[in-house]
Each structure stands twice: as structure tokens, then as C-alpha cells.
Image 1 (tube, rainbow over the protein chains, first blue to last red):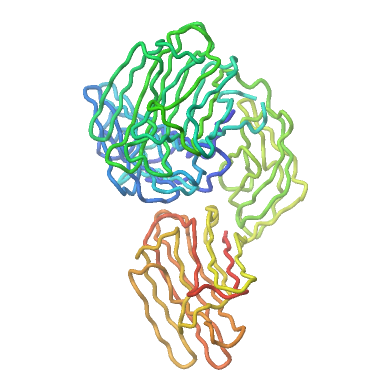
Image 2: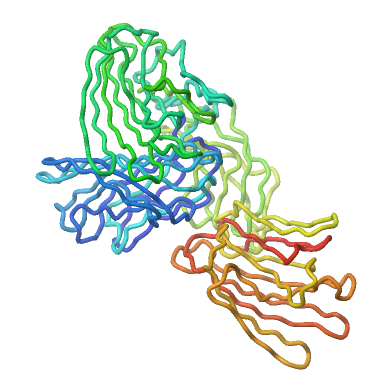
Length: 176
Length: 431
């Protein structure tokens, strides 16, 4: 198997965590994948408040395209944002027990010849509402990624959320 | 071994570029194929194109939806000789920036037409950038034994572009894994780095590093060593069963480490810079581990500068902007003075022995950076030190702050005109 768990929050038991921080990321994989099952306590229904930072860098651009069941939308963050905006997850006003999914891929994260380009797929359906999108992010930094921070601005991850970080190899360590 | 996502082959483009990337002799034992690409070409707004089994006839169709930041578009083309993939580059196509994309090819070895799903982005800090979802079909019932990726605009893939082909399978573990053998255990001040050797054909999907004495849940790793902890410092621990081979059927811990008991100390050396040759130098510490609680710099040395009061100055995370402030208080044996600057491009205030002072005299500083990984705290620095020149000298207390919440991953410790020969700057992690 080439996809390995690096770290996980487990199921977050209480709504008191505004950030998840993964440090000491091994430099032995080729790619990273962050998988979020989340909901926030934000009052905003489509809560695009789960932001991402790589190695503490605070300068990102980002774009997204998606649909909400009736229309498509395209967005741009603009230059030098402190966080990369991930796909939408539900907020406190969304239907109870509805959580969103985000799959975030960071390719070649140790390659110092490459700025870090982030690809995020995500969405949720709330039985009458919802959203789906693909998002891109850009960090003007060729340094290897050693830490990842997932942030909920002005709110917390709702209880029941979880954030998992995986490493993806391009070789098989056991030769199987 | 459980095979869910099996790497088949990786190709990395070398100097000079590559017009296309082909995977031949694709194994037929998987359920699906996946391609992960970190790619770049020399043509603006380029996209991947995909063909199978060297088929260049008009046997393909595709559909896509994409956004540019200001609008969204969907289009379709039928009866063409390729499937279009995600965008690779933007109009700006800046240096060191590569697209991020993946392709899924379901039931590639079956007897139906072959479906492709792909998604990708070409982000580049520009007004317009592409996010794209693609679907496509190859109207052929042959098993896919080779595939070729190339540029829509017939450009070349740039150096450092990587293409990895994976096989996906629904084969599961059939036995519990075999235990690894533990090797050397290295103290990391509150953590231990544990080396291990996997057993041959152990069937492990991953490895856990854990200990009943540690406070947290297991850490994961694909390769040796694994960092285990945290532990209370100044205690002895028996490194028994600290690494386990893991798959979906079980966890098999290792035996006791051959080196026996280990002690977690308060301090661990991260790196030391000493210049044994003449000439000024500075100390740059990069990739600072993130598992300690505090950092401490121990410095003994002198500056090459002849300017009176030339200080040590420190920058964090490569930030050279005016994002620091600092104050100092010094006593010279007869009076006390104080000062400071804000905002400033570094933290200074720690005066050094300079060129022209008493020969071979050195200044000494202990510099502490507390809670350096905490995202809720600006990074505060405290230094104590000074020097005596047999008749003159200083004792110094300096504090400084870096107006940033980011964890400290890099420290640049510098002296005006550089540190002299034999100066010694050591970085420690404190548990």
C-alpha cells in the first residue's frame, strides 16, 4: 500500500478547537493528502472557513469553481491571503448532523524546485441545499512542507469532525 | 500485503524536457488505474491530453467543466483522437510552478468502453487560474496496456515534472504482519527516535511508534526511524514494543530494544555551527524539528566588525521585513543603559566582542525562544550574556519579539561582518 496515515485528530469530541496543527511531517513520502470530515460552529451556512497553511507560510492565492444545485460559481481569493480557502463545509445553521468532506492534495511537497500548488475537492449535501467545488491554492514558497495548519476562522470545528493526514509514496517500502 | 493503491511506476522529467510520457506493459491485475501528475509545460493555458494503446484514431470523446476565478464554462468534444485532461499551466506560467492533477481510469482491463475521470488545478498567483473536472471515454473494448500523456499544444513537459501510475485493487490482507526488529533509540529531549528494520515480506501496511509510557496516541511511519513520545524527561524507559507492524488484521509489536533502558533528557542538540577557518560567517539553522517545547541558542564568539557595540542579530523563518522589536539593558561595571527599536528587521541588542578588543576574548549568550511551535503566541526571545575584557566589559539582558504566530522552522543567527574564526553557535531543543 502506498498511502499511509501520518496523523489524525480522531473524532473531535467537543466544539472548542479552532485549529488543527500537524507538525514534524515526515519528509519520506512523495505527496500529502489531507482528508477532512467537518462542520463548523460558524453562523455562515456555507462555511468556507476551513483555511490551510503550509509550514506557517502566510501568503496564498486561490481560485474555485463549483455549484450549489441551481447555479455555478467561480471565485478568486486574490494575492497574499494568510490562508488558502478550502472547499465549503456546513456551518451551524445547516441541517443538523450534516458534515462536509474535503480531500486536499499537495503534490511533491518536499521538492524545493517547486512552489506548492494545492488541489482541493469537496462539498456536502444537506437534503435540499448543499454545494460542491474544486479549489486551487498557491503558496509562493519552494521550501519543503513540514507543518500543516487547518484553521476555522472565528469559530470552531463542530464535535464529530475529524482531520486526517496521509502520506502517499511512489514506491513500495516492502516490495510487495 | 494489502494492495489498495499500489505504485506501478514513476517518471520524472529530466533536463531538456519530454514531449510525452508513456507507461507501457501496464499490469492487468488491478481494478482501476490512477495517475498523479505534478506537471508543467512551456505553453500558456495548456492542458494534458490522454491516449490509450497508441490509438490515434478519432475514437475518443470528452466533457469538462472549469472555472477561471471569474467565470465557469462547460464544453464537450466528440469523435476526436484524444481525451482532454485538466489544465497544466496558466497564462503567466511562472517559474517553479507546476500543475496538480489526477486521473482515474475505471475497469481498465475489462471488456467495456473505458471511462476516465480527472481533476486538476493550475494555480499561479495570477488573476485567472484554472480548476477543472474532466470526463472522457475511449470507445474501445480492449484492455488498456499502455497510456500516453502529452501537451494539448504540443509543448514539452518541463524538468521536474513527475508522473506516477498507481493500480487500485480490492485485494485485502490475508494474515497479520510480522514484527520489525528494533535498532538504536536516540534521545530527542522528551521524545525518542526509534530505528527499526522491517521483517522480510512482513505484510505491513504501516508502522506504529508507541509506548505505554508516552502520553499521546501512536505515531505513524512508512520507514525507519519513528519518533515516539512525548515522555517525561529525566526518567529511564524500557524501549519494549515501541514499534509495531500494522495491517487491517492486526498489530504486531517488536521485541525489546537491544540497547536496553533509555533516558529522556531535558536538552537535545539539534545542530552546531563552528567555523574553523578564518573569515566571517553566520549560522543558519533550517528544518528545525517541531516536537520540542522550547529552543535555546548557546553562543560563544566574537564579531569580525570593528564597530563598537556590534551586536548579534537574529531573524526567524527567513523574514527580513520590519516585523521585529527589541529592547536591551546593559551594565558596564559603573553604569546602566537601556534602549531598543521597533519595528525593525531583526532582533538585536546583544553586544559582542569586536575586532580590536582584547585578543581571544569571547562573548557568551544564552538565547531562549519559548513555545516556538505555538500558533497562538507571537515568538518571544530572551537573551542573557555579555563579555569581560579584563578592565572593561558588559553584562546584557535583551528581549525581543517576532510579530508572527507561525512556528519557527528557520533561525538565522548573524554577527556584523560575520562571526570570527572558532566562534561556536549551537541550537538545542528543550523538552
